[in-house]
Amino acid sequence: MTGPDLDEIEAWFDGVLSGRATRDEADRWAMQWLSDDFAGRVDLDEDQLWALEMLAGIDLPSGPGTGYLHSEEQIRGWRDEVRAHPRRSRFSLELSNNGSWETGGMPGQKRDPKAGSDQRRRVDEIFGDVLPETTSDERDPERRSGLPDDWYRENRPPHHDR
Image 1 (cartoon, rainbow, N blue to C red):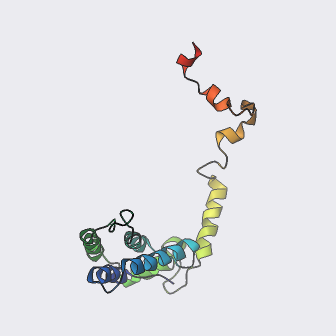
Image 2: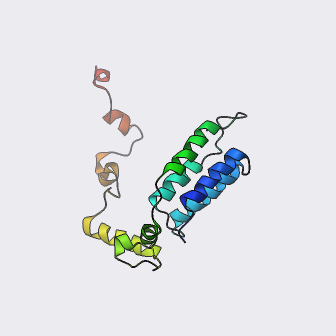
């Protein structure tokens, strides 16, 4: 499954602006696609993610008992951005949706979402993780005596020593 195209996302912005759809409905629809992408059930491209992330959160209140955080003018501006965003050709969409750019696959082949995570895992095994798994205080347990005030003693400003 490849997710909604920009025209469909634009239609949700139009639906909110015209009153055919509520802000809550649009937010729930966008968040479902984003959560499906995160879970690997669908593979959204960067254009879809960009547009869905603008649509998600469209129903946020500006405070208790007040209106919405995002005005209709702001929503109209987002809709116009999506409308003006260049659309990819059908061929390039098919290539990006099935992973052919990254894997050398052919158009029409289904993309296996697990293949991307397996590839990332292999790269991490070869080059290592960017961030360490443990922090410096976890790697140097002898440094502290375990007393609750150790951190305060170690970070005591010099003018307190007088």
